[in-house]
Length: 273
Image 1 (spheres, rainbow, N blue to C red):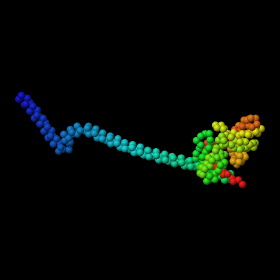
Image 2 (image 1 turned 90 degrees about the horizontal axis):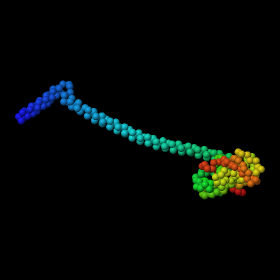
Image 3 (image 1 turned 135 degrees about the vertical axis):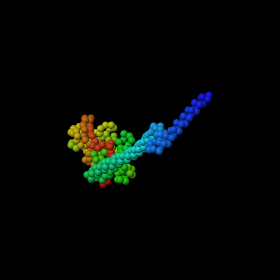
Image 4 (image 1 turned 180 degrees about the vertical axis):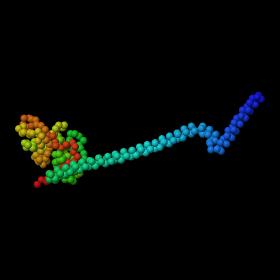
């Protein structure tokens, strides 16, 4: 037992001496320009940990800055997209306005060439069914419109007014099955009535079978129906087929696209003397 305590005491003394020696060395070395030994050992032990921690903090800081920059970039992109969309709508609005001004100018030129009292009107609605081909206009009785006023586009005859209210009216298109327009052929001067059938090409009835019909010749208003003035363009002849041996059925392509009307020129009815 005494031997055990003796050996243990020797080990303790040895450790104390070593520690004192290390402290003495550290104190002496601190007076020189070199790093103290304990501090150097501490730095060597702490360096990998500090390097890892500082590197991680730096990486997190870089990632955070990148995230903030990305958010700012996304916000700027969204703002720019909104501005571009607004500019696009503005440009489209200007383009549409320019096209509308062009169409109205053509109608003004047509009005001047006809020399007849007339009113420019915009199409603001359409009949929901396909059985009755009509359009609603934004002008009515206050603008001088009345029943049976003829309506034109820049390309030709499109129909007549069938109903009138104070500030609007209903335009019956010449493609309606109940419509009828007195017409004549430009070359032969043969006369007939332009009719339409649902889903079929317009045609001219009551043209005598002996009349020479030329494909491509103009179809004009005859004025005999007391609605459309004489000489207005209606369309062009496309073909001719015999009908009941007395008359021929003359196919017609309309000069005006009545399915795409946006503005029309309505001729006022001249007062009867």
